[in-house]
Every structure is written in C-alpha cells, then in structure tokens.
Image (cartoon, rainbow, N blue to C red):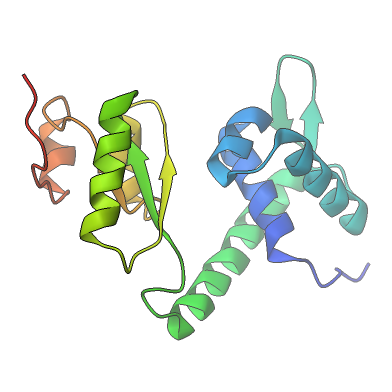
Length: 169
C-alpha cells in the first residue's frame, strides 16, 4: 500500500493524542476544538486505511498500527520543524505566553508586556500552573510564563531563565 502525501497537521494531531491519550487535553495543547482534532485523526486513519486508536468512553489507547506509526510521525514532524526553522525569522510566529494567575493581575501583566514589546505578537494562554508551564518551556512548546517560580523543583528552576517582573504581597 502506498502511503499518501500526509498533511503534517494530521500527523501533529495524531502525535499529540498519542502523547496525551486523551482527546480533550490534546485539543487544548493544540489550541483546537476537540471535534476538529477528532476529525483530523479520523481523516488520517482513513488516509492510511488503519485504526490508530482504540477509543472507549473512558480511555484512549494506541492500536498496534498506531504504535508503529508514532516514531515515524515524530521523525516527519521533527524534519518539518527543522525545515520551518531554517527559513523562519523571529517574528514569523507569535510568542506563546502562559499566565499562571487569573483575574485582573493576568490582564495587567499581559497588557504591560504588550506595551513593553509592541513589535511582538503575544498569544496568551491560561493553563494550570507553573510546573506544567516549565515543562512546556523546556520542551520548546511555550516561550514564556508569568507566575511564581518559588514552587518549582530546584533542578527545573536551574534550567530556566527567571526574571522577576512584579512583586505582590
């Protein structure tokens, strides 16, 4: 069977679901609706003529074909990212900013960041804590996070660049 010329977006959807083993969390990671993510995974399954996941109401797991595809899909996405990086300038994508506090503090921090860096497009996310954000920064999936760094493990903190931007009582 010949493998179709697969859209990297479909491979990214597959890999993210395979890593999360949860469609809702994977959709949040990709900034897409769960329905759109499910549609992309189904489209990839149709293109390949194989089921990649076993889905139940309580669990998602990889099929043997999904397990077989995963390392290949990761290599394709790594190559695609390297190609994009080779020709991208720093302003070719927005900075992904995570805000680890809610309410007016987050709005003020983001507004001030936009004032200080008007040339940068900032895409804000509101996630569930600096521990998660630190892992995302270290993996290269997040550029910056505003939150309290005091609770991070010393080994993680040592690998990050931390800059105080606001003191609160």
